[in-house]
Length: 196
Ligand code: ZN
Image 1: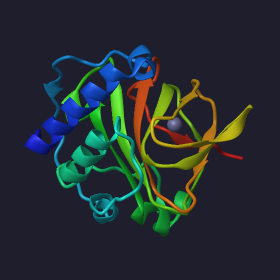
Image 2: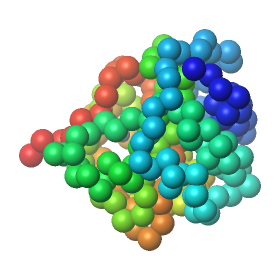
Image 3: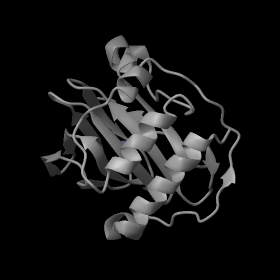
């Protein structure tokens, strides 16, 4: 279901991609995607997103505002189970697919998520086949990836994860809101926790 809020968010993300060479180079943004068959699905963290006051930049503020205003329209998901990450994590995290095979806007060639983690959460090592680019919209987090030094990311910073490269993340005293792009093989797949 496409609400005015989600349409405004798609427009804001499209503007951001066109203005960012790094985002533009990573993936093609569909000019006119078809509405997908996705309905709003609430989650506990919506109230945290609506109240989000974490720092942004001039480049990211419009997208962050559009996320807050469309938070109740979005189809929020939790990839993981309570056994994997615990109840507190599930209550203070969530993501939705704005554009993609299962997104509010359908595309078979691009996938874009909006994802949120509250302060003080540990996102354990996980992996997926698709290549991934994180772009921080608000707040910040410490990113870890196998074979690379950990790095703190702030608004407008990016981090690339290669196909099946295990990666993890920690938030500290502030939440993080991110735009996540996927491309390549496994575009319609899912992330899974690294075992062992
Ligand atoms: Zn990932």
